Length: 234
Image (cartoon, rainbow, N blue to C red):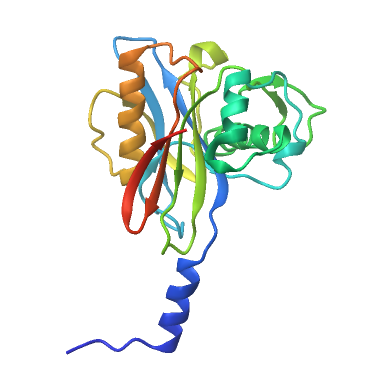
């Protein structure tokens, strides 16, 4: 029997198709103190509307106040320039920088990891001045149309030794649970979104090409056009 669609279903479908992506950022925290490079991932809470119960890198949407956060050191000029000009629209320095600040804020909120100098004077939501200097801009991905929530996510990479982070000190949160280090060279045994698998493959390729992940590198942009998954270099 053919199912009947209600008017409400059609309205929901139309709204989902026109949802505009929201700026977001994600941080791939890398531990290279060993034979293989590992990346920190955690499971999104089952109550999440967007991608529940899958393993992802710490991250989330850019908040309105992120551009007002103080910071200890700025982005590498190449990274800032790429964030500002990629994708056909020019961003201000403050808005581009806010993407990186959002990534480090989310890393702190979701995993308890502070990247920067302690600062009691820093305004909430982070009690430190973020250090942006060692962030590499690795990829950008836009959620395809048709989802109830869409994000325009910038992915950053950061080595724990460069950031002065103890890789044994992290905390689960309500947002991200079962945090664990995943070997970049091995297909994860945990459930991950398709786009996360693509970004992981890019990360492995970048490390194979140059283990230092230099800032001066092309950044892939992943979008969907007319139902086709498209990769372009920014």
